[in-house]
Length: 99
Length: 477
Image (cartoon, rainbow over all chains, first blue to last red; front, side):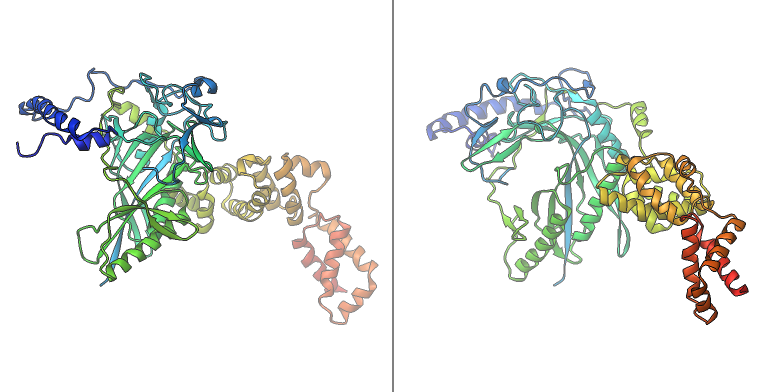
């Protein structure tokens, strides 16, 4: 295989995981092994087989548009590391920088 | 070198449901922060989402309005990103198998009608609201989990005008179908705007720039015009156009580059394991199709035909479904001539009253039947024009049955010739001065007598009848 099956540094960055160079060096071959192992499944011929989106063959688990009570605000905010008024506090964010 | 614009829009429309997309929390603006929240919309680990059937219905109805094909096996995916407006660290969306595929919106352009194709419509949840303060920011999850449908157009628009025509038509159809309020001030309809330019004749698309989260048509128009100009200037000076997200600054009236993080767009979509597919039956889709209202365009044509009203009037009336519904409720079955009078009254006086009072037609006390009766009374000559204009604001404000009011107050027009003749004779006898003037050739004196007769009849005479009668009597003197 020419291209590594996985780029650990990139994946770690996407997952917001801070890895040291030593850790990256250890995980890179380990995760490559895992991905290659899973890739064996690609050798199966699935021509014409629709992808399975869910482990159970049920559809249409829908709910009616009926209001249910929400939780008390104090309970909702109880685990907030910090709050600002009645909101979850964040460090100051530059407005409009949303993704 | 001449360049042409290529514009595509991704429009997020808030669906008119009572509850959120994946939980039963109430959807309402203006509530105290974090009061309409639960473990699902706060993203608690282990909390399980459940699809709101109404949101599916409204999205499918929108798709049917726009001529989309309805996907018989729609599935949800996770779009992964880290931002504090999304506590789960992923947004539930439809990436590969959205509910609606294809379709289009036809707009009018100076070169004739043009169809803007729709790529697809998918259903997703809105993010929470981040509020910004002096030294901190705060998250309010009341909005988090609001059902949004994202309508993705093909890059078929060539100008800012076309983009606005597309949005206007879209908004009109969605409001008509009752799918969304499309209230722009409240952020019910927000668009991400993509624009690139390419030499005329080139088939490959140029490098696109995206301007996100625009909620005013005026802003979108200005931003597109600005970008079209900026990109041409870049080309003229051989400055490469980079693919980026820019922000519209409504005060400086320019777009500015937003430093977006590298890899920010690798969302690593994968199927949402907490939700099973939505597989709609033909019966279900047909049942929803039956709920669709008449399309605005078809309605305009029918109203012109059915009521004999002018194209312009039909246009204005149909811009607001409530107005068109009201007009039709009042005009149904009326003689075309009277229907046209009703339309004129609605377009001038009723619209003015709506403007003055700041009310929507549904909020005024006057029932459509009352307006119909008022116009019919005037058309039949039972009341005269001035009485009509006097009664309208009163009934608009307080309601009531015009026929009963006219009878009770004796406002019926005096059109009985002998009664009117008596008034004319009385006026002539009492005013020898003006009679002499008239005889001396001052024809304008006739107007004075018409006024006198109106006064004597306490305003109930029909000036259209009094005029000729006065002329006749004066001539015979």
